[in-house]
Amino acid sequence: MRDNGVVNVGPEPLTFDDVIRVARHGAPVQLTDDAIAAIAAARQRVDELAESPTPAYGISTGFGALATRHIDPALRAQLQRSLVRSHAAGSGPEVETEVVRALMLLRLHTLATGHTGIRPTTAKTLAALLSAGITPIVHEYGSLGCSGDLAPLAHVALTLMGEGVVRDASGALQPAAEALKQARIDPVELAAKEGLALINGTDGMLGMLILAIDDLTRLVRTADVSASMSVEGLLGTDRVFAPELQALRPHPGQALSAANMTRILRDSGVMASHRDPEACTRVQDAYSLRCAPQVAGAARDTIAHAATVAGWELASAVDNPAVLADGRVESNGNFHGAPIAYVLDFLAVVAADLASMSERRTDRFLDVARNHGLPAFLAHDPGVDSGHMIAQYTQAAIVSELKRLAVPASVDSIPSSAMQEDHVSMGWSAARKLRRSVDGLTRVLAVEVLTAARALDLRAPLTPAPATAAVVRALRETVPAPGPDRFLAPEIDSAVRLVAEGGVVAAVESVTGPLA
Figure 1 (cartoon, rainbow, N blue to C red):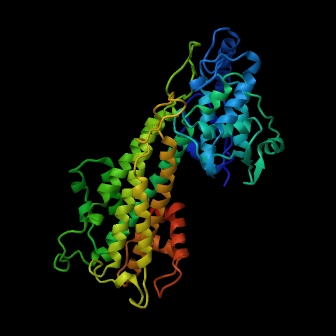
Figure 2 (figure 1 turned 180 degrees about the horizontal axis):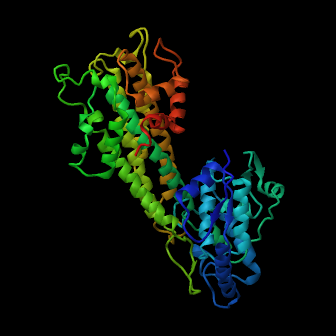
Figure 3 (figure 1 turned 30 degrees about the vertical axis):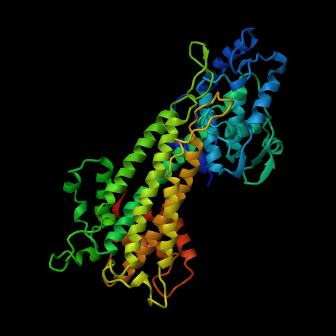
């Protein structure tokens, strides 16, 4: 759905919500008057340096390992075109539209700070592309995360020049020149410094970090819900989630997760059925049940740390060279993606571990030695029916993949540019694998929800908590109640959609109010 509310882009930092609205919901953008004034002031200084006989890096010289060559003024327009064309060297699958829109918005914001020396007309053209819903084709491979996301950003800059391929607002592939013509946007003839200003930033990896934080914030709440359903369906106890026990280890995320689970399980008939110590012979639950707040809580705290890093980067102006407030134009290393790459890798660890614990809870439902009276594999007629046996296989396959994706990319530097760029962040690669990790976690949690809902139905006539019952009802709108084996893949897909679209959390919150 397109968001028609305009996002204003000025020198001040954007918010997470600004990025989500533009990237995921198609909101148009507009440069503020302050941004245009800051851009114009910096451009005046770049024009002065361009006219000077003294070489200035990125303005009147080559780039990177070729920075020692002074470029004749007559060749500088060609220099900018050559820079963009040569750096638009991506390969592989097309990157998602939401990622490219986030990248474009974040680059626009850096331009709006007035530290890049770009011309106002060029920045306005980038804003026009976003507002028109024109999305350059960016490819999976090409960025080493230093100097920033060069190749992905170069594909965007190529579109500004009226070259390359784009998707228009309807999603159709078109030559960039044709899409710009239809939108009545004039291509840009890049001037001195503008090529570097358009491609020298961490915008792709930062955009993917913000999108992942948005997803994981929802999924960690979903993990509280799925864990609660499993504790309930496996006849576990909620006493371990009591606030006085959580206070003994005062990690903030742990307290939030435990409080969520207590609220979700409130007034459960299933829980009430075995609260009597004489009726319950178990001393304590397995770790995957008992320690759910400790793991999901640690995930919350890690997401909060990643959000802090993303906030610092949103307040940054990443370009090289940078135009300072006193008029100096200085080379720097702010384009290095290490701060973002580290937290992108950290979040992949979080996704893998949340999924690993979820899969272990699902597996307990299927084993008659551990599921406390439920049929083998939750099958209608065990032996004739296989129930959720292979749904757990699917979870296990994804969890195994997530463990591989949790291996950090940020330690895998590889030198480039004739050893000028002899240490790189691989932040783009960390971000790409994190997107796969988020998708995998979504699917693993969905299978747990699907399995736990089936188990709760099989506990009848015992009644689940009002909050978990609301999840079961939401799932039953597309997935039938337990019965003989059915084609299971569409039911898993229905559960995945419910998780991905926030339906699981929304169902619970319709009873409990907002979860932490």
